[in-house]
Length: 219
Image (cartoon, rainbow, N blue to C red):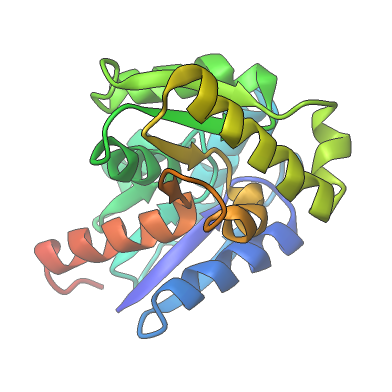
């Protein structure tokens, strides 16, 4: 099986990190990665999401996914998810979609992330995917998003603290780490909390595999 992971931002380092985690989660699956051909290195708000949507569409228009059995959109707003489902023949999965689906199986869940300007978009995704009645909201790390994201150990610590608040203050029974660029930090804290921590990239790989198996051979 071959899957294509698309990073809707322009950071090659983020793409490489997400592909590495995706491959580690399913060593038997061949997973390639592509970065957005234009846009921003970090999606932090609705305008960035729209640019990411346009970039993903342009990428696929110029490079159709021949030979792949599934596509993963690796930004938490799932930009271009509905667009690609209309334009390509293979299943398309978003990391927010997959992460929320796994969290919902544990009960009431929250999203933990670094980007305050994406809170409304995350709530919209939860509602669109049918989780409105069990989605408790988004809990944010403290501090400026760019500064937090620029400190690897500090990011893991900030995410852990926000996760603890989500459990303590909201009563979350599961947590989704909200963002593809947070994949490495999510892995670092996954075993340190009392409720399940859903890493969205591995969740998307698992869902993509199930969808590919159901849809049969393509490309």
